[in-house]
Length: 168
Image (cartoon, rainbow, N blue to C red; front, top):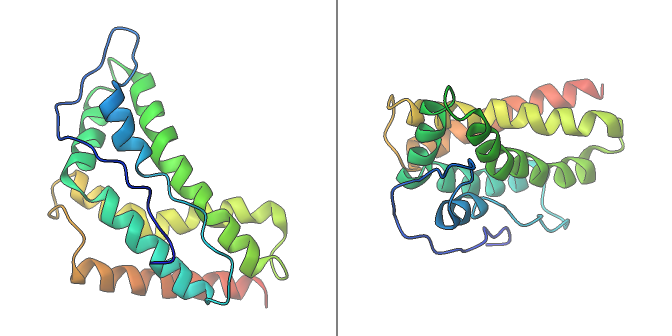
C-alpha cells in the first residue's frame, strides 16, 4: 500500500495508570502506532487517497486493544482527566494532522489555508467518529469489515460533495 501505518508490535496487556498520570510504555506504543505517515502527494485523486488513509486509520482504531484503551480513558476521566487528553493527543490529534497535507495538496487552489485544519477536523467527524464511537460503546463489533468500508466510502463521497460546494 502507498499509505503505510507505522508497524509497532504491541503485546495485549492491561492498561495501567501510574500516580503521575503517565501511560506505561506499552500503552504509549499502542497509541503511537496510530501515527500515520504522511501520504505521498502524487497523482491519486483526493477521494482515492482519503479512502486509503481512512481504511488504515479505521482498521487500527477499531482493533479491540485500541477500543479498550479508549474505554479506560473515558471511564477514568473523573479521576484522571489528563489521561483522556493524553490519549487524544497521541491518537486523535495526530491522525487529524496526517490528513491536512492531503487536503492542502488537493484543495489549496479553492480553499483558503486557514480552513484546511477545520476541514481535516470535520473529515474526522464525518468519516471516522461514527464507527469508532459505535464500537467504543459496544453498539457495533470491533474490527473493520466490508459493511464499515462501504459506509466509509459513502461518508467520504458525502463529505467531498460538501467540500466541493465551498469552492463554487
